[in-house]
Image 1 (cartoon, rainbow, N blue to C red):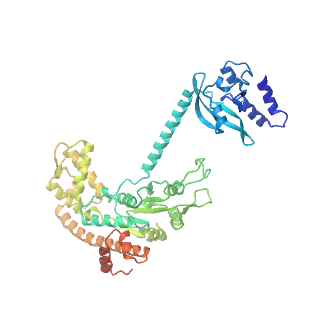
Image 2 (image 1 turned 45 degrees about the vertical axis):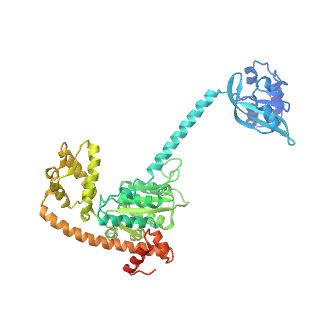
Image 3 (image 1 turned 30 degrees about the vertical axis):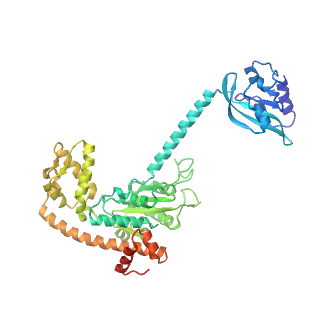
Length: 476
């Protein structure tokens, strides 16, 4: 009866609310944890009824006895001596290991007793819970790694193949653009490798930061704003209760890659322009702007200037994106890369198909060199796959294995291709020089005219920089 009278004394008639009264009762009669209170001599002053039953005692039968009589390894005497709590320790009670904690009681700065609590669940149960927690942590880690891989650059400059002067110059220019913190517009036909260059530019400067790819044509019109800029809870029917960050928030301190940007609706173009200017976004359903830091790399296979004339693309957005225009020459203008690509992709196709095609015959190669490749590298891969299927058990791809469209009027194609290649080289060279001038001027402006620092930013020897400044007629 003593335990019950103690509870009654504590509760008394102090006007306690039902909640507080229930809490105090739980403190003394917790079905999940034991409660032990000892004085400064380690004599038991209170032991809850369930613990008394555990030791085969009558109610109140433990009072006045030394705690070590029941729990030889008890931490209560240690805490009485040191005044330090012991939290989450393992104690052996009646031959079973339990987890418990001990807390000192102070009065006027002196230890006058201690409180001990033991979890009634066995250590095996706790270990089971710990194992579940460990598995949960593992799953969380795997999800984080998956997100990290999803938002990491998949390509570097090492993945870009090219033996032609045009491709080598393009790679060098891309590396210089990567080191200057500016938005980039990549222009090139489908299949020329715009995504490879976008990821490589990001990786070269900020490989440890996220790059978020957005395939603009694939975004449903009605979801474009929420996908790009996120939304708050309750923003629309079906919205997540917690809200959702948009792609720009996820790309904070990293890169946003907008593939085929020409397909963005005009309404989204207007909001994108504001985001680019202010570097802040507003979630759908929110009035609070959020600051974000990112770099835009946009890509298009369309002449955006023509779309601007037709009213299908905002002029102000075009000039905001076109700070650094990076053109990629089509395959027909760099036929010198063709043998390298054929060799590279044949290896991959053989592994995939289980074939052993070693080469392309000289006659078949001549046909391929004279073809215009409107689908660029993507079309080349498709042609090689078709040819390998036809050649199957042979060792070489012959002319008869090539699709019919490649073999039409070889002589005319040969002459036309040569003329176009020469013209393309001249045009592309001029564009490359223009971009290089812009890069040099931007670097000089950034370092207030210091040629030494500009050369370091541009990753080129000072002598080369001086020669280019002189050749282009530039002034710092």
